[in-house]
Length: 493
Image 1 (cartoon, rainbow, N blue to C red):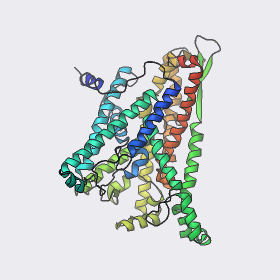
Image 2 (image 1 turned 30 degrees about the vertical axis):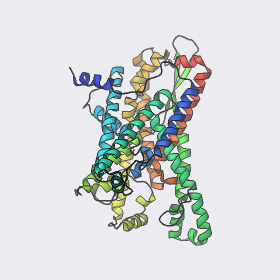
Image 3 (image 1 turned 180 degrees about the vertical axis):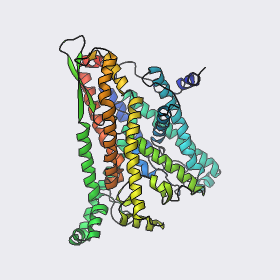
Image 4 (image 1 turned 45 degrees about the vertical axis):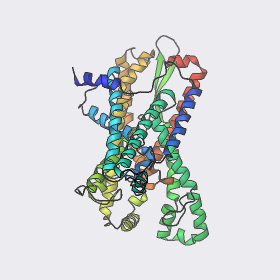
């Protein structure tokens, strides 16, 4: 018995959300989607019982695209799901696990292996944070309950694992019964909340300024000399960065660019082989693999930082030292993501490091940090985009088979899978690479300029793209509700 055959029965027995037996009506899909969204917000506001206020959130900088909530039941967010996907895609891409993802049997095995890996990652992401002392029990609560701190720690660990499993099955519910994907829905929910907070929050930060953009400018107008601010160099930097003008402009530009690029596509003409005159088009979007591979890139960086942080906590500083959850030197500093102008403008970096009591990096070190992040975003965007289309059935071979099965063909070519695949190979891999580079560059620019609410370039990019595609999915669902023939064409009886 092969390794695959021995594991397949185990994967089949994993708990799963039942798939619908027939077509799920749009109203029911919408109800399931909204229900899961409400549950997500409810879980985000359930604090971990027994957690100490001294605990450190290791993934604080990655909240925008990990879709979790600090100190809550869903502390891990979609981190385990994304990490499991990274591990499996790398193993399959390197042929360590030999799978033909165009084969339905191998695809089912891949999905089962991914779910199993999510359970493993939930434990592997929660346990080091607890064992490393970053997640601490409330000893006063433990004493009042008459139990040891170890018991409270165990309770915290169980709660985190339950939250991780709930996120997994909520994602599965949306994917099978709702609209879009749960992962995308949770990212949109978290980032939208950050943007709204970034606009209207009246709470003051450590400098005494309100956090929200509008309250901040009301405060600045009332208390600052505007003429001085706009004419001096340091004042201009204050207006652009601290005042949030740069973040606002960046947010608007990224929003408009992503909407424009999402509508840019190459359309391959199709004709029905049996119904004369029935024609259509197969759209290949510029962002063919969507922006979700960017989650994989940032998640890879987050897990690298987690390893460095845990080693540093053990006194092993060969890869870099940390203050809180921020790397201040070594290779981990260069591998950390750029999130805002405070990470690359020399005067702002100097202020941040001096405030932490850390040695200030030289200008060339800051430049190298930006360069490494650019390489990871652009190179990683291409690599993970190519992996993504193969593992989700969007590759040239799988797409050609779907077109053939639908009864369509490309005019001027013989009606067989090979002919369709030759045409698809001309476009899909090239567009995927171009899209991966473009999204990597767009993410880099957004990360350098910053965004409202500190959502980060990656988070904003993901949100706009996911919302646009959600809009397209809703329009498609409504069309299939109105026209049963279209529904039967797509195989949704």
